[in-house]
Image (cartoon, rainbow, N blue to C red):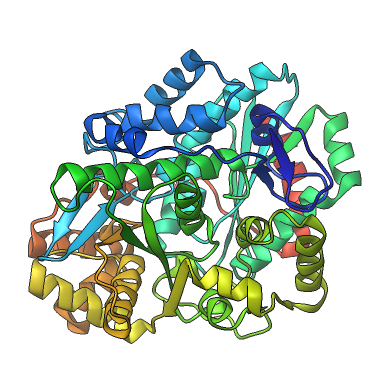
Length: 500
């Protein structure tokens, strides 16, 4: 069963929690019980396929789904038509000491596919389990990759509609084109004048506006979310932590039961939070290393215990981490406090009203026994892409480069020689301008279109351009809408009317 981090809702089934997305009190749904895997169960994973590992993890959390339901969802999400690697999430050795978990072999070339190919399947089953008759409207705020992955995942899924908001000047051109050209009879997209936090806050306000939700309900619509605030989006991400560990054992990189560190580029905290759940479930994780860009609100929090969004917002070359309000941190705080919903509610209210909160020395010490954090400037990101390519003939996107550089600092500043797995969150081709500049210099950009840059990177490296990205060159732009953040509810209403 599932309850809210803020205490206002409990005893929800998994299907109900996934359908609702966000608790009515503004909190996030969390499992009331964390399943624990023993050493033998974890060891057995190394002989399984990714799909079989997924089944093993999901059935631990989604007890109201039948085994047949889960197998059907997994087959629909992770297959050869959607992923260009049989491993789904391959673990690749880079150099002599590093392993990179490539999470970008899905249809939109970003790690969000790992969850957003599965979430629509889980939601579709949830509607049947709960006997829901209304249309479910998926609202998404995106800093780049979530939007396209959600649009592709929910495209023409029965009984659903999806509306995506992205910051007008806060995504890469490839990311914008991916969303603007999205096909499907149940999709809508709008650029928001502002940054990602403006878009995310706008979506949260819509969810918390009871009168607006009542109005939509009168027309037969119920709101839900595909952001990582939805448990159905987060639980699939736990799978690849277990899967990468099993692969590392199978490859001989570690022995069974040996601890590992994971280095995770993250902005909204969902990706690394999935690793935290994996650790709570018994996966031998020593440290979870949080990597940020110049929008370093998370790294400051892990160093000081103070979360403060009252700071300048920077547009960086790793835009999916250009975030100042990390929603999923709330789930971690719930567990660190032992389920103290009053304390979590107080902190979240302080953040909403004053823009900051502080957790105190004891909670910070507990967190720092698990997490370590640092951040990276853009010039260092470029240098890291160049250095790794020249040394190891391996291409990093700007987000993965941030994680690589933070991993270097962790190793140099600590005496920890625990094996490292770095999560690679996007294909380098999604950030063609930054990557081409890093490996070929600024002059290589002159006179180049987006697609000329894609081809040049391919020619220089021998890596193939993902077919879904090359196809954008001739794809028709279907979505041209934009709005102010306070106009988002009206856009939602108008979009639903137009789709009918």
